[in-house]
Image 1 (cartoon, rainbow, N blue to C red):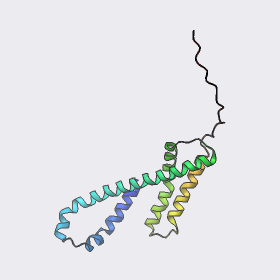
Image 2 (tube, rainbow, N blue to C red):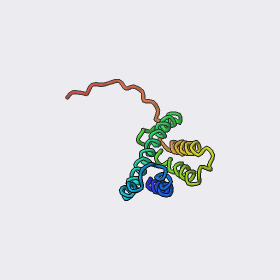
Image 3 (cartoon, one colour):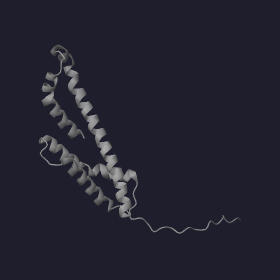
Image 4 (cartoon, rainbow, N blue to C red):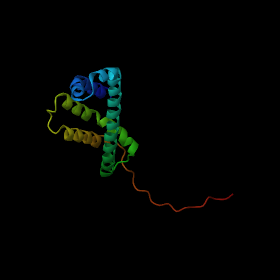
Length: 145
């Protein structure tokens, strides 16, 4: 996430002159907030990208719960969340490279989600299988001495 935030910040820094030129704020006021603008922008971009990644991992984990049920495996949401966080590494790099290249990868978002789901599907195959269903056992009261 730090890597994506740094690249996003560099992109913001390059285009900030154009963005600030379009505003109606006088140049004198911008010089006063200049030292605060870039650190605040970096922190904000880091927080937003991290929050976005957590949301994506949560959605992918919910889809992974369905995959666990389909494949007859045992898994909890917390395990699938970790698996989906790892599985989102390559898709995040796909989207990052698409952004850096100017959007030349066709259907990059769909491709990244498909890659994440393939990773999760393959990872679910390593989860333990559901055990045989247990037969109900008659309740026996404890023996008294």
